[in-house]
Image 1 (cartoon, rainbow, N blue to C red):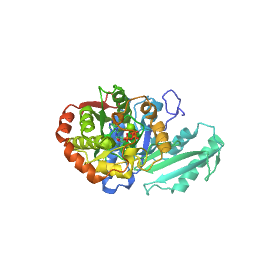
Image 2: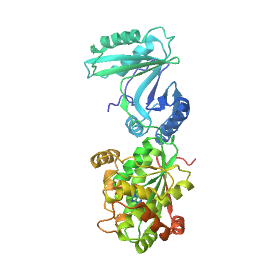
Image 3: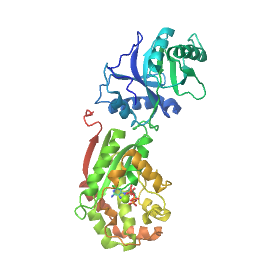
Image 4: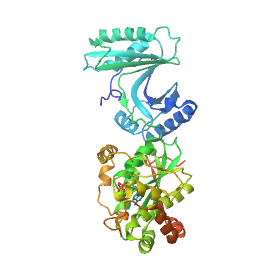
Length: 409
Ligand code: ATP
Ligand code: MG
């Protein structure tokens, strides 16, 4: 990435101008009366994401956010942080200046002076209609100045480089680079959900997808220590740490699951054990959701992937609770999930060895088409409610923050 905006470079900034980062939203623009809410949440998230950098201020301005910095700042570090902020369509290092042709021309030349391109175009967007020129007129004028200065040629249909000009509210923004953001909605605009996080490949990807839709997640992990090692707990903590980079604050419930498993093992048919383990997980996750004012659960379930994920089995597990369960990976292929896990950075943590609590005390060929009536009958006999409450009392709760020095509210 070019280091166009570091303070070491000799750049002639027009008078009345500042460097800033302009941030364009992804879907926020579509949200009508909720727009202010979304913009404010995105603004807060950007402030959080940049809170350990030399951030100046973040201002809402006519359908975009402008991030200002003091004189010197670490542009690659800021860029890599913004790349993880959900709700951003793209962002650009820009110059903000007045609306005189002289200032706009100088800022455009500054943005375009880094050579290496033969063709370019100027694209002007004018949201202030009283500006004395039309967009094509201004583009042509600035384009001519760039041709004169650089010798490059105008190509409107397939340019190697673009100069973008935005005219609004007595200001002009000029930039030449659009860096893609992640899209999605700002974390925290869509209520809360409890995410069941194993230390496998799927559930961290499912969690990431829901954070991308603005949902604030509370994580729960069920472990079978001391019958297993601590490995799944350690892996899960690593995963939550990584996912917290996208939602800034997280809570992880570590629930000791062994006592529940032992009850189920003693009192239910072997073929059904996994289903009752899973029903208990769902039930306890729902209890956490009620306590945390969360409206749904999230899992990494994927239709047909393993015996417990046939539609019949998904149904009988679901029957144990009232809250809706979001399964963002239900229809994905394993390959697609693995690709995404690599992209997010969870794959290597998820493939660290660990013992899965669900694989304890289960037969090799569990039931794949459970009968709901039979399940309900056994569930009544098992009567695990009290045990669930006791076990939840023993859960360890860990809090995470990103960046780590984020101030406590
Ligand atoms: P994953 O890759 O997420 O572990 P999986 O393909 O191994 O999923 P299952 O083991 O059937 O499938 O688990 C299905 C879902 O149930 C997981 O995606 C996760 O949401 C939840 N889950 C499974 N085990 C645990 C656990 N120990 N703690 C919390 N949630 C769990
Ligand atoms: Mg698993």
